[in-house]
Image (tube, rainbow, N blue to C red):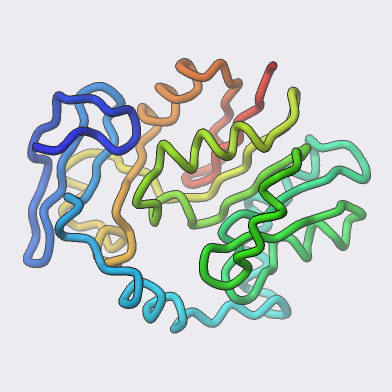
Length: 212
């Protein structure tokens, strides 16, 4: 079996299979992931993303994002500089933070591909419903940490793996662009490995603070 794409662990076992894909799990960091050969190609992946219709003026969508925006706003200083990573075609979280006086940059592989924003540092980096899409999660994770100033924040939203029985019935795995699935244990592993403070808020918000 292939190594874990997050921690490079070599001890990987079969976790689950459905009609479309197999799912493996790393015994070190507990990440659940789809084998490389079963992932979509870039053209198919973008075609799926093009179907998303996230309107910044949609109050329901704003309420959804407020689950991350509100705790971030409680923790960052006025006028903070931030990056909304993987913002998609209709950036909304960044707009919500900008409306509160923060200076937000945008990056998205397909829709805002200006890599110059990845050459600076930030008080906060946000990624809402992004991390489960990453084909190279460790590479992007390290990139995020390099972008955050000491004392800064990484704010994530993603649904979390509970156990294999719940996974079997989980709608989240059925999205073919979702290829890596994190649990609390996975994030706790990363926080300990990388010296981060971590907070879990509700069922799908994870805040990590870079200490040095």
